[in-house]
Length: 285
Image 1 (cartoon, helix red, strand yellow):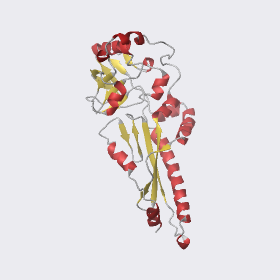
Image 2 (image 1 turned 60 degrees about the vertical axis):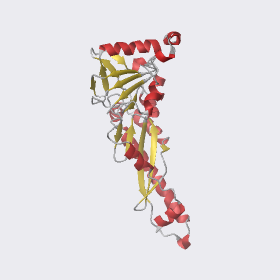
Image 3 (image 1 turned 90 degrees about the horizontal axis):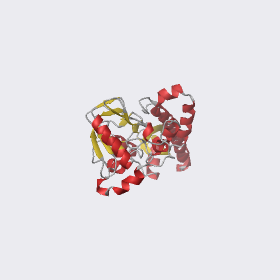
Image 4 (image 1 turned 45 degrees about the vertical axis):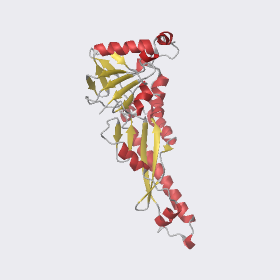
């Protein structure tokens, strides 16, 4: 059978995509899984796979040329399917409380730009050869590319402004410098998104688009997500001496903190620029 010839010639049958799904369990709310892929808000990546059947034709004179041709066609079909699945999965990404699919309905130009982004999708892991003479390929896009398309030019902090904290933070001993903000929202139902806000109990914005530049929003992302302080993503984003704050409520993708904690966060920004550098981490279930 053709599948046996393929297995003899190609030994790297992997289960990368299946492993990725098992590692991104639905118990972590910042990872959204579907039958064909997943949205990982913590690592800012969207992954989808496509499958295709390998045409079962017996090679003549035991030649592998026909096998290779059939396999090449199947791979191309799998990539095409993966790209189509990526578009559908992207529609489910939560941008700022609004899904990308909703934004596409409001602005038709977004869809054509997303098609361009899909064209630059890269292969995630090795190719899978499945039972039933099928091949599967996983493709991925980074959220930075999606953010570049969706993020407006206006409404963000100007990058031309010289941060005042650069003049004052050096006078503070390194051990006393606040390196970031960690907000523990594990007791609340928070929908992860690409652009959440932090609000105090009086309804005042503590952290949002006016806190950072557009380039920071696109390339770094406003917040990171983790499920515990032991997650390696925590120290990478907020450093070794973050200010720890307990969330007191949530609404969709937004998190609420007390006015007292809000004052501490604002002071940390004034002294160390933690908000303008997007050094904010949300702990979710």
